[in-house]
Length: 335
Ligand SMILES: C=CC1=C(C)c2cc3[nH]c(cc4nc(cc5[nH]c(cc1n2)c(C)c5CCC(=O)O)C(CCC(=O)O)=C4C)c(C)c3C=C
Ligand SMILES: [Fe+2]
Ligand SMILES: [Fe+2]
Image (cartoon, rainbow, N blue to C red; front, top):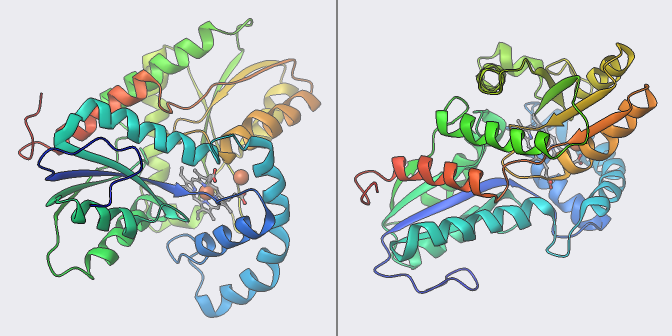
């Protein structure tokens, strides 16, 4: 048996739940960030340019420039438990393990970097799991996130003679449990502020515009989440897309430009949050909470608040438990 460290004994293990998130470097040094970016940006689900054209650009330009800049950014958000994304995903896994008890083995993995999906899936199989729920923690479906996480798991399953039965967690962008958890988390965040925001900004990770034209539902899923969350909060949300990468046209409006426009339009108090990220990470803690604040204040904004993701707090964990129990129907008692 190869259980995760500190895992309590598993009673008659049959069911595994593997939480999967994007991945993060092992350290904030340039070499670790370069290794991580090389794996991430070589994924053909992420950069849809033929490798013969993309790999020379990646190896010759991107991996010689971006890792240094990104390493500085990671350093600003690094925690004593490592990268925030890894630390929070681990905490989510531990919290769910407690809720599901000994009949379910809950573990976590990353699509890029460590712990690897293949390694943790194999550990589940070796621990006796004959049924596994793969749970990519992306509320909005996107080929560059959900599909590639599942692809990686299926690639490992392809090496097994005796595979476990597999289910995958569907996107949950419009699930009432998700919308309710977000609404509760945003309300709690707003109640703790010492100002009343003129605007609430929902910032989603961007994607190349072309993926929308090719039929990826990501953009529509983001818009629907924002509409339902706005209805639940009784307030209109400003929707924006962050983290543009490369020269191609990305989904808009861009979060950084939106913050500047809001400040210039006299909306001097804003609260911003990132409903598409199940855990805080570089993209929220550095890009939104640090750089977003700077651009907003430089443009004349006076009050800025970043509200955290669902993370391993009670509303988010209860929501994940509800979604996962539903998928495990027929495998375990739903209660
Ligand atoms: C939440 C959904 C995400 C989508 C959709 C997504 C698409 C996407 N991302 C890049 C390029 C980068 N993303 C980076 C970090 C990053 N991206 C997500 C999530 C989505 N990405 C997360 C959770 C993170 C944070 C990882 C962490 O360690 O905290 C980065 C690396 C950081 C940097 O160097 O700035 C890049 C690069 C592309 C190209 C893309 C779609 C095509
Ligand atoms: Fe990304
Ligand atoms: Fe970024």
